[in-house]
Amino acid sequence: MNTSHDPVSTTEDYARTTTTGDDASATTAGYSSHATTAGYSSHATTAGYSSRATTTEDYARATTIGDYARATTTGDYAHATTSGYSSHATTAGYSSRATTTGDYAHAATTGDYAHAATTGDYAHAATTGSLANTTAAGDFANAATTGDYACATTTGDYAHAATTGDYSPATTAGQLAHAATTGLRSSASVSGENAIAAAFGANSVAKAANGGFIALAQYDGTAIVAVKTAQVGRDGIKPDTWYTLSPTGEFVEAE
Image (cartoon, rainbow, N blue to C red; front, side, top):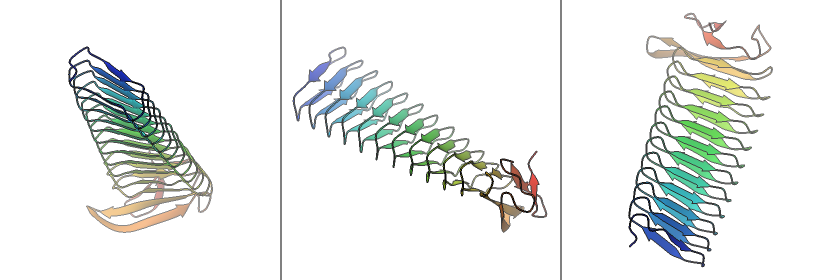
């Protein structure tokens, strides 16, 4: 067992390093290596294929750069970063961050104020805490949030952004990318061609580029009475303009 300020480093394949003290560091550079820390401000770093880095306390960091690597933190203010193919980064603490840059990578956070970001194709980013942000920049990448005031943003083609919390925006910039929100007073925005912006919460807004579609729900109190759709560029619907539904179910520009 390693105590505080007692870093451990291995460079051989299948090696494992474990620390349980505060401010401890665990580093591995070999294939299929494992690095685990349980103390505050601890660091776990792996650089080999199929490596794993795990921390469970506050202010800890877990970083992997090898393919098929995993980085997991459960403490507050923790960071998990992976840059290899098929890598996973997971955080569960408040103000945590999960970042992946490799293809097929996943980034997931469940604490409030957490951020999940991916830049590789086919990558997924998901957050469940309020005020959390998730961003995906690769084609076919998806970004989803379930907390209030959380944001989901994608910039690749065929990428989707979805939010379910109140006051949460969903934004996509790629072609055939869709943005959908179901929370109260949320917004859905798409700027790519052939994309759909759907905002089904009460008093929500949506906008799309020319040729795209917007979809909004009409309410009578708390009951949905209709779902209205419109194609941008037809029937007076302007591109890149926020729309909402009037009490009578007509599309009107949002103030």
